[in-house]
Image (tube, rainbow, N blue to C red):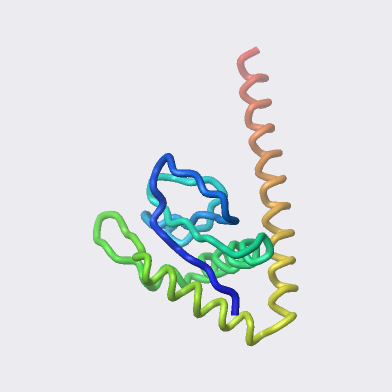
Length: 136
């Protein structure tokens, strides 16, 4: 079983180990991030492969609504570090029981996410082009 550590991110702190961030406040709690923000946890992994697996697992757990079950708070919803850790551990154990199909799913989700980002970049450029056309 792959091991990981999860801690509360401190603003201004840099990390040398392979890591990613998980948003912990707001309606998007549980969303994995590559760049830090003020309200996030940092997840440390032993190597890049484990980090990528955990990142995409976290993305699948967010999309599947597994983090949403643990949201607390009436005004600003949030997820606790223990709930986040336990959800990731359960997902990791389940994924290891599935085996190679899970790695296939991770590759598919990674490809879809990459394509989604490319399309979002095109949409952003089209928006800028539209504004430039209107202003002339």
